[in-house]
Length: 106
Image (cartoon, rainbow, N blue to C red; front, side, top):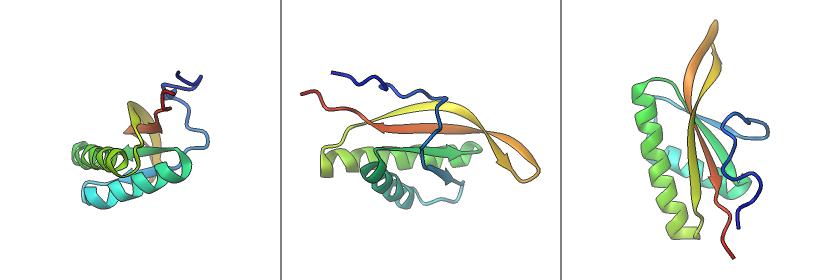
């Protein structure tokens, strides 16, 4: 049975804790932050600007998904979208990976 908010609305950013990933971010460290935030809050957004940052973010999400499933039995969904972020003097378009716990079917 699915909840009313599944899949997540990729435009809804209220109440979500964003993690920003850069090109030099360590995917294992980011995966740990993703897993901890998902366990704590049930959801997290990962933001990345640029090809290298998106690459690191995707690696981190995959590592976190595997970790959450194997060590806690948590399944998550990942919904990619674009988001405008305020950076320095203006705005940039980033990739947003909305990560949410998938309700268990009972």
